[in-house]
Image (cartoon, rainbow, N blue to C red; front, side):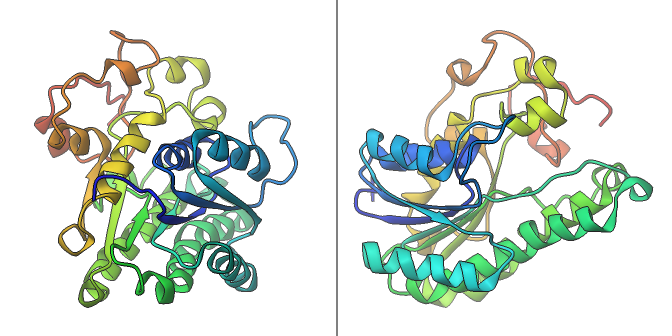
Length: 290
Protein backbone atom coordinates (compact mmCIF):
# COMPACT_ATOMS: atom_id res chain seq x y z
CA UNK A 1 0.00 0.00 0.00
CA UNK A 2 1.40 3.39 -0.97
CA UNK A 3 -1.23 5.76 0.35
CA UNK A 4 -4.21 6.07 2.69
CA UNK A 5 -6.88 6.84 0.11
CA UNK A 6 -10.34 5.84 1.41
CA UNK A 7 -8.85 4.54 4.67
CA UNK A 8 -10.74 5.58 7.81
CA UNK A 9 -8.81 6.92 10.79
CA UNK A 10 -10.19 7.29 14.31
CA UNK A 11 -8.01 9.78 16.17
CA UNK A 12 -8.27 10.78 19.81
CA UNK A 13 -7.45 14.44 20.18
CA UNK A 14 -6.17 15.93 16.94
CA UNK A 15 -7.60 19.43 16.96
CA UNK A 16 -4.07 20.86 16.93
CA UNK A 17 -0.37 19.99 16.98
CA UNK A 18 0.99 16.59 16.04
CA UNK A 19 -2.43 14.94 15.81
CA UNK A 20 -3.71 17.52 13.36
CA UNK A 21 -0.52 17.26 11.28
CA UNK A 22 -0.99 13.48 11.02
CA UNK A 23 -4.63 14.01 10.03
CA UNK A 24 -3.72 16.52 7.33
CA UNK A 25 -1.04 14.24 5.88
CA UNK A 26 -3.60 11.42 5.62
CA UNK A 27 -6.16 13.81 4.18
CA UNK A 28 -3.84 14.65 1.30
CA UNK A 29 -4.15 10.99 0.28
CA UNK A 30 -7.95 11.19 0.42
CA UNK A 31 -8.42 9.50 3.81
CA UNK A 32 -11.45 9.75 6.08
CA UNK A 33 -10.49 11.21 9.45
CA UNK A 34 -12.60 11.34 12.60
CA UNK A 35 -11.36 13.83 15.17
CA UNK A 36 -12.63 12.73 18.58
CA UNK A 37 -11.74 15.44 21.09
CA UNK A 38 -13.13 17.79 23.71
CA UNK A 39 -12.20 21.10 22.09
CA UNK A 40 -15.48 22.54 20.88
CA UNK A 41 -14.90 26.21 21.70
CA UNK A 42 -11.67 28.14 21.01
CA UNK A 43 -9.21 28.17 23.91
CA UNK A 44 -7.68 31.55 24.81
CA UNK A 45 -4.14 30.10 24.73
CA UNK A 46 -4.47 27.13 22.37
CA UNK A 47 -5.33 27.12 18.66
CA UNK A 48 -7.94 24.94 17.02
CA UNK A 49 -11.21 23.14 17.68
CA UNK A 50 -12.58 19.89 16.31
CA UNK A 51 -14.52 21.98 13.79
CA UNK A 52 -11.55 24.02 12.54
CA UNK A 53 -9.58 20.76 12.30
CA UNK A 54 -12.36 19.23 10.20
CA UNK A 55 -12.33 22.23 7.86
CA UNK A 56 -8.57 21.89 7.37
CA UNK A 57 -8.86 18.13 6.74
CA UNK A 58 -11.47 18.63 4.05
CA UNK A 59 -9.51 21.49 2.48
CA UNK A 60 -6.52 19.13 2.27
CA UNK A 61 -8.57 16.57 0.33
CA UNK A 62 -9.97 14.25 2.97
CA UNK A 63 -13.36 13.59 4.50
CA UNK A 64 -13.73 14.73 8.11
CA UNK A 65 -16.00 13.88 11.01
CA UNK A 66 -15.64 16.09 14.10
CA UNK A 67 -16.85 14.31 17.23
CA UNK A 68 -17.23 15.74 20.72
CA UNK A 69 -15.64 13.03 22.86
CA UNK A 70 -13.94 12.89 26.24
CA UNK A 71 -12.03 9.61 26.15
CA UNK A 72 -12.23 9.28 29.93
CA UNK A 73 -15.86 8.19 29.50
CA UNK A 74 -16.57 4.83 27.92
CA UNK A 75 -20.05 5.74 26.72
CA UNK A 76 -18.66 8.72 24.79
CA UNK A 77 -15.97 6.61 23.13
CA UNK A 78 -18.49 3.93 22.15
CA UNK A 79 -20.82 6.57 20.70
CA UNK A 80 -17.96 8.18 18.76
CA UNK A 81 -16.79 4.87 17.29
CA UNK A 82 -20.36 4.00 16.33
CA UNK A 83 -20.71 7.37 14.59
CA UNK A 84 -17.54 6.78 12.58
CA UNK A 85 -18.68 3.33 11.46
CA UNK A 86 -22.09 4.68 10.52
CA UNK A 87 -20.55 7.49 8.48
CA UNK A 88 -17.64 5.70 6.81
CA UNK A 89 -18.52 2.01 7.09
CA UNK A 90 -15.62 0.88 9.26
CA UNK A 91 -12.30 1.80 10.87
CA UNK A 92 -8.87 0.96 9.44
CA UNK A 93 -6.57 2.95 11.72
CA UNK A 94 -6.70 4.00 15.36
CA UNK A 95 -4.35 6.83 16.38
CA UNK A 96 -4.06 7.32 20.14
CA UNK A 97 -2.91 10.92 20.19
CA UNK A 98 -4.77 12.43 23.17
CA UNK A 99 -2.53 13.04 26.15
CA UNK A 100 -2.31 15.06 29.36
CA UNK A 101 0.95 16.35 30.79
CA UNK A 102 2.22 17.85 34.02
CA UNK A 103 5.94 17.78 34.72
CA UNK A 104 5.95 18.03 38.48
CA UNK A 105 7.74 16.03 41.19
CA UNK A 106 5.77 13.79 43.52
CA UNK A 107 5.13 16.28 46.30
CA UNK A 108 3.88 18.92 43.85
CA UNK A 109 1.55 16.60 41.91
CA UNK A 110 -2.01 16.76 43.20
CA UNK A 111 -4.04 13.60 42.83
CA UNK A 112 -6.62 15.23 40.58
CA UNK A 113 -3.91 15.85 38.01
CA UNK A 114 -2.41 12.38 38.57
CA UNK A 115 -5.80 10.84 37.85
CA UNK A 116 -6.31 13.00 34.75
CA UNK A 117 -3.00 11.92 33.21
CA UNK A 118 -3.68 8.25 33.85
CA UNK A 119 -7.30 8.44 32.69
CA UNK A 120 -6.38 10.09 29.39
CA UNK A 121 -2.97 8.62 28.62
CA UNK A 122 -3.07 5.01 29.83
CA UNK A 123 -6.75 4.25 30.30
CA UNK A 124 -7.82 6.34 27.30
CA UNK A 125 -5.41 4.54 24.98
CA UNK A 126 -6.61 1.16 26.24
CA UNK A 127 -10.29 2.13 25.94
CA UNK A 128 -10.08 3.67 22.46
CA UNK A 129 -8.06 0.71 21.14
CA UNK A 130 -10.45 -1.79 22.72
CA UNK A 131 -13.51 -0.04 21.29
CA UNK A 132 -12.05 0.22 17.78
CA UNK A 133 -10.86 -3.40 17.80
CA UNK A 134 -13.98 -5.14 16.43
CA UNK A 135 -13.86 -2.83 13.40
CA UNK A 136 -10.09 -3.03 12.95
CA UNK A 137 -10.44 -6.82 12.69
CA UNK A 138 -12.48 -6.28 9.52
CA UNK A 139 -9.88 -4.07 7.82
CA UNK A 140 -7.43 -5.46 5.28
CA UNK A 141 -4.53 -3.46 6.78
CA UNK A 142 -5.39 -2.39 10.31
CA UNK A 143 -3.06 -0.29 12.43
CA UNK A 144 -3.04 1.12 15.94
CA UNK A 145 -0.50 3.91 16.38
CA UNK A 146 0.21 5.25 19.87
CA UNK A 147 2.06 8.53 20.28
CA UNK A 148 4.12 7.11 23.09
CA UNK A 149 7.81 6.70 23.92
CA UNK A 150 10.14 3.71 23.95
CA UNK A 151 10.11 1.80 27.23
CA UNK A 152 13.50 2.99 28.42
CA UNK A 153 13.47 2.24 32.15
CA UNK A 154 16.31 4.61 33.06
CA UNK A 155 15.57 6.30 36.42
CA UNK A 156 16.34 9.72 34.91
CA UNK A 157 13.02 9.61 33.04
CA UNK A 158 11.08 8.92 36.24
CA UNK A 159 12.68 11.00 38.96
CA UNK A 160 11.68 14.52 37.78
CA UNK A 161 8.02 13.67 37.05
CA UNK A 162 7.18 10.12 38.03
CA UNK A 163 3.39 10.57 37.64
CA UNK A 164 3.65 11.75 34.02
CA UNK A 165 6.20 9.11 33.09
CA UNK A 166 4.02 6.34 34.54
CA UNK A 167 1.00 7.59 32.59
CA UNK A 168 2.92 7.96 29.34
CA UNK A 169 4.65 4.60 29.68
CA UNK A 170 1.20 3.10 30.20
CA UNK A 171 0.52 3.97 26.56
CA UNK A 172 3.78 2.29 25.60
CA UNK A 173 2.81 -0.85 27.51
CA UNK A 174 -0.40 -0.97 25.47
CA UNK A 175 1.83 -1.12 22.39
CA UNK A 176 3.98 -3.87 23.88
CA UNK A 177 1.08 -6.07 24.94
CA UNK A 178 -1.44 -5.46 22.17
CA UNK A 179 1.11 -6.01 19.40
CA UNK A 180 1.54 -9.57 20.61
CA UNK A 181 -2.13 -10.03 21.52
CA UNK A 182 -3.43 -8.90 18.12
CA UNK A 183 -0.76 -10.59 16.01
CA UNK A 184 -3.10 -13.39 14.95
CA UNK A 185 -5.53 -10.80 13.61
CA UNK A 186 -2.61 -9.21 11.70
CA UNK A 187 -3.26 -5.83 13.33
CA UNK A 188 -0.14 -3.69 13.53
CA UNK A 189 0.35 -1.97 16.89
CA UNK A 190 3.22 0.49 17.14
CA UNK A 191 4.41 3.57 19.00
CA UNK A 192 5.87 6.71 17.46
CA UNK A 193 7.95 9.30 19.32
CA UNK A 194 10.06 12.28 18.21
CA UNK A 195 13.84 12.46 18.38
CA UNK A 196 13.72 16.19 19.06
CA UNK A 197 11.31 18.58 20.69
CA UNK A 198 8.31 19.30 18.45
CA UNK A 199 6.88 22.81 18.21
CA UNK A 200 3.48 22.36 19.85
CA UNK A 201 1.43 24.25 22.41
CA UNK A 202 2.89 22.02 25.14
CA UNK A 203 6.42 23.07 24.21
CA UNK A 204 5.56 26.74 24.04
CA UNK A 205 3.46 26.79 27.22
CA UNK A 206 5.09 24.17 29.45
CA UNK A 207 8.54 23.24 28.25
CA UNK A 208 10.52 26.41 27.75
CA UNK A 209 8.55 28.82 25.58
CA UNK A 210 10.12 30.55 22.59
CA UNK A 211 13.66 29.39 23.39
CA UNK A 212 12.77 25.69 23.14
CA UNK A 213 10.34 26.35 20.29
CA UNK A 214 13.24 27.72 18.27
CA UNK A 215 15.17 24.49 18.90
CA UNK A 216 12.21 22.34 17.87
CA UNK A 217 11.07 20.70 14.69
CA UNK A 218 7.67 21.17 13.08
CA UNK A 219 4.89 18.61 13.68
CA UNK A 220 5.09 17.62 10.02
CA UNK A 221 8.07 15.36 10.71
CA UNK A 222 5.86 13.26 12.97
CA UNK A 223 3.11 13.32 10.36
CA UNK A 224 5.40 12.08 7.61
CA UNK A 225 6.80 9.35 9.87
CA UNK A 226 3.30 8.27 10.89
CA UNK A 227 2.27 8.10 7.25
CA UNK A 228 5.28 5.92 6.43
CA UNK A 229 4.26 3.50 9.19
CA UNK A 230 0.56 3.40 8.38
CA UNK A 231 1.05 2.46 4.73
CA UNK A 232 3.20 -0.54 5.69
CA UNK A 233 1.89 -4.09 5.80
CA UNK A 234 0.37 -4.32 9.28
CA UNK A 235 1.08 -8.04 9.49
CA UNK A 236 4.81 -7.33 9.10
CA UNK A 237 4.97 -4.06 11.05
CA UNK A 238 4.03 -4.41 14.70
CA UNK A 239 5.51 -4.10 18.16
CA UNK A 240 7.90 -1.31 17.22
CA UNK A 241 8.83 1.78 19.21
CA UNK A 242 9.57 4.05 16.29
CA UNK A 243 11.48 7.34 16.42
CA UNK A 244 10.37 9.84 13.76
CA UNK A 245 13.75 10.59 12.21
CA UNK A 246 14.77 6.94 12.16
CA UNK A 247 11.57 6.02 10.31
CA UNK A 248 12.25 8.62 7.64
CA UNK A 249 15.92 7.65 7.32
CA UNK A 250 14.74 4.11 6.62
CA UNK A 251 12.60 5.60 3.83
CA UNK A 252 15.72 7.14 2.28
CA UNK A 253 15.58 10.66 3.70
CA UNK A 254 18.80 12.30 4.88
CA UNK A 255 18.07 16.06 4.87
CA UNK A 256 15.76 17.11 7.70
CA UNK A 257 16.37 20.86 7.55
CA UNK A 258 12.89 21.57 6.17
CA UNK A 259 11.38 20.38 9.45
CA UNK A 260 13.46 22.67 11.66
CA UNK A 261 12.04 25.91 13.00
CA UNK A 262 15.57 27.29 12.79
CA UNK A 263 17.36 25.51 9.93
CA UNK A 264 21.01 25.17 10.82
CA UNK A 265 20.34 25.98 14.46
CA UNK A 266 20.59 23.80 17.53
CA UNK A 267 17.97 21.13 18.23
CA UNK A 268 16.68 20.10 21.65
CA UNK A 269 16.26 16.39 22.36
CA UNK A 270 12.85 15.15 23.44
CA UNK A 271 12.15 13.27 26.66
CA UNK A 272 12.42 9.49 26.88
CA UNK A 273 14.71 8.94 23.88
CA UNK A 274 17.29 6.26 24.82
CA UNK A 275 20.94 7.22 24.55
CA UNK A 276 21.46 4.40 22.04
CA UNK A 277 19.18 6.19 19.54
CA UNK A 278 21.36 9.29 19.57
CA UNK A 279 24.33 7.07 18.86
CA UNK A 280 22.62 5.81 15.70
CA UNK A 281 21.90 9.17 14.08
CA UNK A 282 24.24 11.93 12.87
CA UNK A 283 21.78 14.57 14.02
CA UNK A 284 23.24 16.67 16.82
CA UNK A 285 20.88 17.47 19.68
CA UNK A 286 21.17 19.11 23.07
CA UNK A 287 20.37 16.75 25.92
CA UNK A 288 20.34 19.31 28.70
CA UNK A 289 20.45 17.68 32.13
CA UNK A 290 20.07 14.14 30.73
